[in-house]
Amino acid sequence: MEDKQETAVARYDLTVHKRYRSRGGWVLETNRGPKLLREYETIRSHFHLENSIKEHLIGSGFCMVDDVVPNIDGKLVTELETGEKYVIYNWFIGDECDLRSESCLLAAGENLGKLHRAARGFEPSGAESGEPGVLLEQFHRHNKELKRVNAYMKNKKRKTEFEIYAINCFHGYYEKACQAAERLEQCSYYLASGEHIRSICHGDYNYHNLIMASRGTATIGFEKAGYGIQLLDLTYFLRKTLEKNGWNRHAGDAVMSGYDKANTLTGDQIDFIYIILAYPEKYWKLMNHYMNKKKSWLSAKNLEKLKDVKSLEKKREEFLNGH
Image (cartoon, rainbow, N blue to C red; front, side):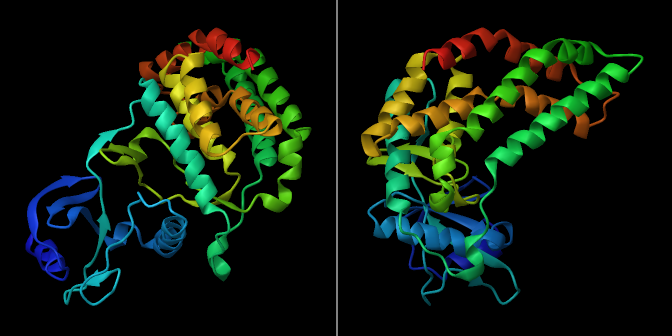
């Protein structure tokens, strides 16, 4: 470790036995358990809200989070005489959540349910609260974008293989996208969520941010935490899980069962989850990527991704229709 990081660590009541690079910082194995040292410049924009959320979660009994360790002066940020700033977090040793393991998926679902329960009642000060996004507007915006991209590709005189394949897929995916928006407009849970939408979400609940430690599931990576519809955390994790498992129902059921065990799901909430999963997000992402990059050059990998999405469509439909 460089001298500046050594100087920063010396400001803590820690004895470091071993250190190595990881997670955009340095993992420290210490006499007080594992820690993570990071440069403050990489995290400052979200630092105070993130800390407030973690303090609330810990106070509510959800303790296995990467909260900040105060230095010997009681400060959360350590500033050196040369101007550099550092932060040390409590850390965890273990493997990332295995999306192909049913026991891991059950644990991940239950952990998220507990996180959402523990987040209730959080009230940040003033400007920290932010504004929740409007999901229905996002759906409509994405649908307009899909039409615009398709029209652009159709009007090209010389089309790539990717463009031809995407045009052939368009009608089916666009129809499903519009159906999802229409269903969301009529969704009881979504319509009733207006007054309760300002709940704390993790914002990036995925297998990279879950460490299966010896004493339980640890949750890290709160950089995107903030207000929104909590169930979007669940649908995000569900979508990633199902994509990794070829839309296998057992994988999806494991996540849902785990969550329901800790935070009971109502019928209206389950309908909302399936509406979000029904939106053809993967196809939209590929079209969005196409429009925002050099349209005259597309790697074979993008065409392969599009073909993979299409090949799994039948299994995706079977999962959704089995609801």
